[in-house]
Length: 385
Image (cartoon, rainbow, N blue to C red; front, side, top):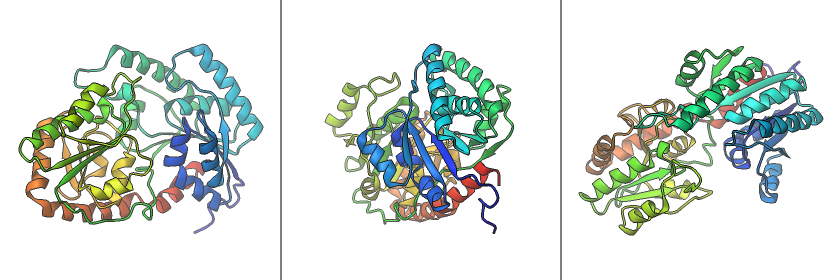
């Protein structure tokens, strides 16, 4: 196979993200691959600390700080931020600008075009909460933000050389449903991970334990997980339920601390907050649970399957791509606590199925989520090979 860089001379790439965490978590393996392929990498984030700058430098990338109000709706601030971002991009003069997540894709694309970057690519790793249906319908705020985002998408997307999605539902639900034009789009699938970092381990099942990992937000399914745990505990008191993730007190969809503490105090769950390394917790668990309302392709599920864990997740965009029903886990209807309880009870009563589906989950991860394969594919897509 010919060198994917041959004749292209694209050796400088700016990755515009929303946070240092996302660069160091979701782009880590890709940055390492880019360096191996001879690229000079610049990682953009709005919240670098001395520690995260050093961590990014250790990957071989140059940290670049910029200003962008992630959740703000102030057009004056956004225009000022756009002008400053364009100035930074001009100074770096990359061959490629690759932006990820909603707001960086919008403003990273516009900034890149303002300074005439050769190739501009965006990747949406999910459509965000304003496109995620809630049991009670979309809130007034979500509908308002959605209108603004669609307006900005219609400005920015035609300026992209390529837009990347992670699943096949997102382009239909966004581009087709709202008549948003873009020159070209591709579906990548999962962003992948290092199968060396997440190795198979045999579930212990003493007793059976279920793990939830994610921000403790309504749309991640935390309330369904807690309700299901409470119901199962009434039947099997010895079964364990572990929760990892932050409480976001500023997010209206976040669980309240007093409600979370009720589940902790009543010994329904073990709560360990945010952890930087989930691998020990995956090894302690037997079944991974993500009752999310919508995803791109969830990283946490990929990590769980690479670790050899059966998965219970919802039959929604992004999640349904990760599970073959009855092979490496189960798909359940969204918002359905009783269906979640039923599948949890199945694994408790049939512990051998945890082993069988866990082995299949690892095989699925090796086939679909190997970062070595995916990063090569992603770079080929980005440069238009």
